[in-house]
Length: 187
Image (cartoon, rainbow, N blue to C red; front, side, top):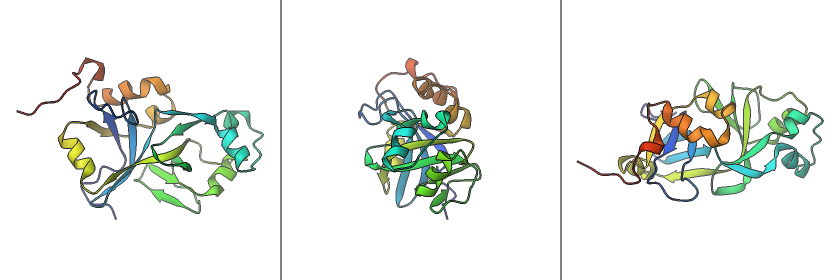
């Protein structure tokens, strides 16, 4: 059970001062957050693969061009060989984690089998790898103004062009990140 102060289901939006190449201008969907740390998936980094490539590598046939052409995202630098499906709705998959009432993340092969057959979740993105934070690390980064947070928005995850997701996500809290300085201060 997540603590009442969890940020699961929130976007982490990189501030301009965050220059780590994995996260610069990044938007991550937090899937888990608690006293032991946090796990999230970047939603605005394109991998070199399409879903058809991933399915073929898993020896799954996909006859649906719309599914085969779906881009696969780089979810983060940790375990880049591992796949994650971020989706709305619960579904009945072997290995799903319910983020909140709106979102789930699934790591089992059965969801990809269903997607290849055109029977997967109606709204989903596939990512390779994830971003992870040790206990207290994310809280420290938030105090250092490395990230903004905002309630995750399905329109941004599924509909916004990748190159617009950072600005669109910051816009959820009324910020234009291109107008911010690349350094932070404390009063």
